[in-house]
Image (cartoon, rainbow, N blue to C red; front, side, top):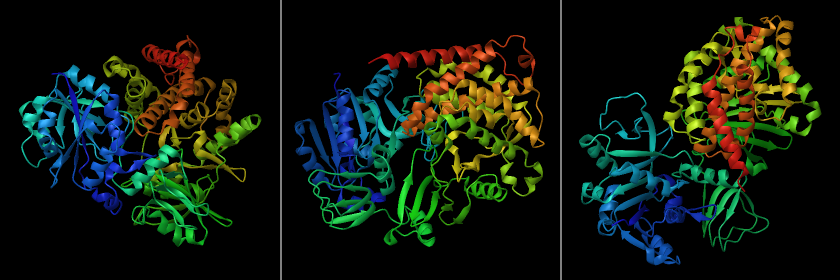
Length: 636
């Protein structure tokens, strides 16, 4: 009895989505034209699952009609729930259908996910566990503890498993595989699977396996998340129009979903809304609190203000460009619970007052965290270098002058803005960066087994020690071409909240070894070698040539490892796949530096304790990854 059957959970009320979910059951909401329910069915079908149960309670009639209208309607078993049974109760309600299979896949019908169900099934069979849970990293709600052996150790602390080295907090995606015998543990009537998991872990520690998914997973539980999912898939300013909908030419829509059969009123203007047959649900003010600050500053859509989301950055903060007549500003809305808003306000104000490039803070709403900022424009260093390669050297020189100013304006200012100095790039933080590279790039992106790269610890420790021996200065921390703008030909800086006390060469190599700009290697090296002169001209620390070269080799390796970890995390976990395109050039730059360290011989540079040691194991691993990626690109 090898058959696999599945169940899509589609009975929920969608309370957080109200009033939208009062009109449409959440699993029937389309994302870029395809309903969440159909996306779940397609994921299961692609894995070879033929028979699928779907439970229904809220708007059960609509779900029944939707399934009946499919050409493959005979595949489905509709499990109606007159009262909600919960996640475990749903399995009990379809017990007879599910018990006919050897393996059961359960898939939440209200999530957006690109999980490979076939891979999950293969892992489940290999591990021979009663249950295999698909897990992802969503720090806001991580509550499942996965041990280093790939087995779930605890759920929300309820199994009371003692902490163990290698434990990793993750989030249950709502997708899992179960053996038929697991059904025997599901009690009759209403119940939740979390309770079943906890009971099983208490009786048989290690009985539940984990399968880590590093791709896209989104809980679309609120209108903002639902609309943001469209923005990520379709781009800023999207308008998604369902079949049979009518959108007049004079209607003005910005980031809207028009459901099938809906008619948009002539001359109407909607922003961040879902439009159905005879109804419209707009993003509520409490889900877009920055709009209140915008209105208070005189930027009102009803008065002609244009609100344009700014995308492409790696931050979880949301940015909106405001335009009204000749006025310009940018709204920044931190993610919920963002601990860096206070730091941003203090550091940005401090740098702006001293003419060091940060934007002016125009207003702040403490209740929502929203910040109104000076608009620095769109002329990033990366964009200008791409448009005018011949002028790149001069522009980079001016940016390095700004960096030299930043590093030499005086430690006596610490008492004015202590938050700029309260974090340190110490050995522990440097090691966090290299662990991040291993977990998010080597394992999460390149697909290497964690056990195969565990032996990098010694080289990572040695690299961190070399960086930590450098003299320290105020470090921006992410001083790269996308965070540097030219406004009225003046060098300006964004993303300043991460500033800290750290290695003197870190910002210079962040700029000159970053992969965002295709600079000739000779120009990178020339600009980097000349930076100590800029510091000395301002009365800063003086470095001998061999000292500076040693420092830039160590800090350059450290920074590129961190950047690759970030690209893996943003691209694979956060779904911001544009960052993946920077990986090839970042790898090229990393291999160049590893090669320079490897053939340094007995030079004065490599005899310095500021120089990184030979890193043969890291070089070998990077070569393997680069070769695999090169071969993958050759496959048509």
